[in-house]
Length: 177
Ligand code: 5GP
Ligand code: MG
Image 1 (spheres, rainbow, N blue to C red):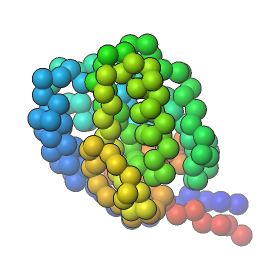
Image 2 (spheres, protein in one colour):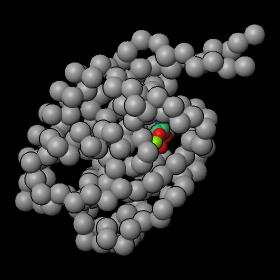
Image 3 (cartoon, helix red, strand yellow):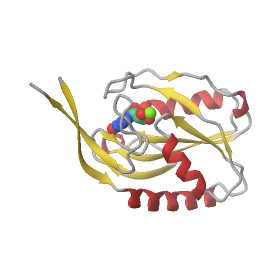
Image 4 (tube, rainbow, N blue to C red):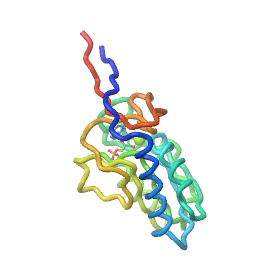
C-alpha cells in the first residue's frame, strides 16, 4: 500500500506571492502595447494564473486550455492530450501560456507549436517552477528554480489531491507494509 506524506515546505505563500508580483511587473513591461491572450494550462496552471493576471497591468483576454501528460502517475506519459481541443479564438493572438511547472518540456513544446499552427501570432511561456534537470529548457518567464523533487500544492496535484494547499511542498510516497 502507498501512503501520501507531505514533507517540508519548499516555497511558502508569501514568497510565491512576492515573486508573482515581480513577474507580473516584468510581463507588463515586456508585453506593453499588446493585449496578451493569457492561456492557463489546466488544471495545474489555474491557481498560478489567477494570481498572476491580477499583477499584470495590461488589457488581457483569457482562454484556458486543458492538457494532460501525467494521468495518475508521477512520471510523464510522454503523450499530451488536449482534452478540449484548441479554441479558434487563438488566431492572431499574442499568447502567454501559463503552466505550473517545467519538467520534461513536453507540454510547453507541443502546445507552443500547436498554437502557432492554429494561427496564433506569437507564443510566450511562463512557468511558476522549473526543475533543476530542465535547466536547459527555455521559458520566457520563470518564477523559481527548484530541485528534482515531486512537488504539490498551489495548483499542483498528486492523483487529483493537494491542489488547494497555499504553499508548495515536496511529496514523499511511503511504502506501507
Ligand atoms: P512537462 O510536460 O514539462 O513534463 O510537465 C508539465 C506537467 O507535468 C505540469 O503541468 C504538471 O502537471 C506535471 N508535473 C511535472 N512535474 C511535476 C511535479 O513535481 N509535481 C506535480 N504535481 N506535477 C508535475
Ligand atoms: Mg499539469
